Amino acid sequence: MEIVPSVLAADFGCLAAEVTQVEAAGVKMIQFDIMDGHFVPNISFGPPIVAALRPRSTLAFDVQLMISEPRRYAEAFVRAGADHITFHIETTERPLDLVEDLHKAGVTAGVALNPETDVLKIIDVAPYCEMVLVMTVHPGFGGQEFIPEMADKVRQVRELVGPAIRIEVDGGISPETAPLVVSCGADTLVAGSAIFAKADRSAAIAELHRAVERTEVVSIDD
Ligand code: DX5
Image 1 (cartoon, helix red, strand yellow):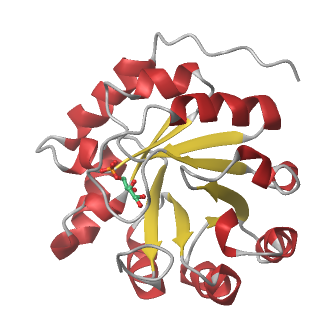
Image 2 (cartoon, rainbow, N blue to C red):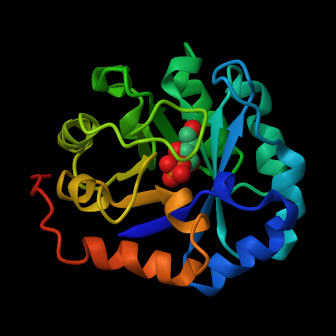
């Protein structure tokens, strides 16, 4: 089980210090929400922010491309210091080519599904990815309400991909919603406001861990 803080919810005025805080809390990875104001109705930040933080942190950098042209910009995020790149299945007609590009560039690859996108859309590409991201809100903003129907979608994805691939969830993940998605097969929990909206980030991360430590996970045969 991995808790992945989303820097979208952090204080951009002191981002390095914010990352240092969650690193001290023992997380192994942080997520960067890249938004282009086209695929999603918000603009966040680009490669320069990832590059600025790279020398300031030893964490794995999980970059989620909520952008219309992932293949055009993926390389720039690899150069900036990404360790993992997730693209949205809705943004490319050639997902297998993009996964190949990412692997050739030396990063792991993930494919993301928006809430309205059917699981079958990733059936051909998921076997070549290291992670599947199930969006549990409509992408674009932090602090939204978790969409309960997404729990069953997590279960469908776990049944589709089997036990070996990571399933990440992102959006409205809190101590209240985390046990549900974990019981359905999620193992990587992105949390923004549940961590950065709290004064004590370590305590917030510990609370998320406690919320899921006794959760029974659905059993999936290989
Ligand atoms: C949506 C973003 C958010 C963010 C986490 O596009 O991807 O889900 O990472 O937001 P919280 O955890 O605050 O709902």
